[in-house]
Amino acid sequence: MSDSVRRHDGGSDRPATGAASRDDEGSETPVRPPEPDGLPVLGNVHSIAADGLDFYERRAAERGGVARYDVFGTESYLLTDPDAIRRVLVEDHATYVKGEMPREQLGNLLGDGLFLAEGERWHEQRTAMRSAFFRERVDEYGDAMVEHARRTVDGWDDGDAVDLHETATGYAFSVLAESLLGDDIERERETVRAAAESITERFDMRRLASFLPEWVPTPTNRRYRRRLDALRGAIADLVAERRAAGPPADPGSADDLLGTLVAAAELGALNDDELVDNAVTFLFAGHETSALGLTYTLHALATHPDIQERVRREVAAFDDDPSPAEVRGCPALTAAVDEALRLYPPVHTFFREPTEPVTLGGYRIPAGVVVSLSPWVVHRDDRWWDDPETYRPERWLHESPSGSAPSGDGSASGEVAVGDDAPGPAVGERPEYAYFPFGGGPRHCIGMRFARQELRLATATLLRRVRLEAVDEEIELRASANTRPAGPVRVRIHELAE
Image (cartoon, rainbow, N blue to C red; front, side):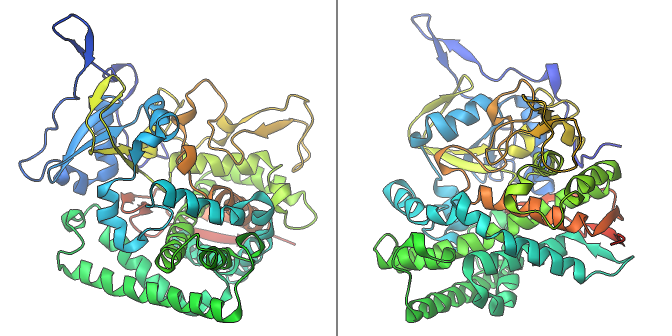
């Protein structure tokens, strides 16, 4: 049975990506994509609310790599052509901004932090905090990642049925609290949990109200604003405590991200509002997306016991839980994680807005519209991926040029995994942006290295101690702010002999 929860009919019958018409002088000029086929006023909202992920897949299958749709009168373009995606994120990135739609939807949540900042302010913020994500610094967080995974296992008994999403969310929060925001955030766990619950509810695309502006006084919006205010207040209190204790002399000497942010603010690289905005950004985006990635990785391994056993043999060969450097040399583990991020990308859509008219995929796109870049669709496109809806980590493996076996299970296969610490594609002939779970270009996710290390270390630590058996063989996903499970994702725990 396929691992997919949704399918689309792709392949050779897919429409051509672009089109052109002849102007009066006979030269070709790009044309607009076909009009959306939505309802008056609502546009395509009803279809997106019914199943946003399925809508994206069907729209791409029917209309090609550049497909127009409409949301309450907002002109939007779904982009699933990898070459066009590369142009938006890399080659022509200066022509695009995050735009009004993400700011209207996320402005009160993320403010003027790194995710929504533009131009020079974005560059100054990224420069100020990038030292917190250098490989050497990220490696230092490895002990916390392993220790909290051990504590997670210690809380399980043989035969327990656990909800992976609930477990992974608690784990990811604990890691982020210790590694990036300090132990003091632990006392605000309930505040963060309540805010995350309201954020999920606010952006659940199955609800028509999620497409309404935040100022509309629905019960969901009122609860969202109240809990978000509480979260921002808690972060502001933590900042005040750090300042009272004496901030680091410079961002590079801080022990965690909050220290980095406070030091940057003291130097004038961030103002106080931007400091809180960035702390909220990393707290929400950091633990939510990592939790989803871990949920989907462990579920995929639970439903594929042969692959799970291969990864277990690889990580069990170490005398102790592996270090960040050691998991980078574990090809089966790395491939297992990367394939889960392909099949179930935690971020289903990235958004951009062109600041001037552009041509993408042979179509003319006006300025000021929403351009939606969908990893969900591209990662499941059979033009780029064989058997795309099946979990197949082996697609990420190839023979080492030297033929030597990597550290890990000591096999003589000499396999290595591609894409490590970079957003590149798996083995095979396909465009680079056929795979982009962390975005790409200058604005790729600054926490990419942190997230991938966390997923590998957590998976390795767990599989050295337990075997996972799927209780829920199939999972139903829904589009909210991220790609979330619609219900519990349960596995049964089987303890391994020492």
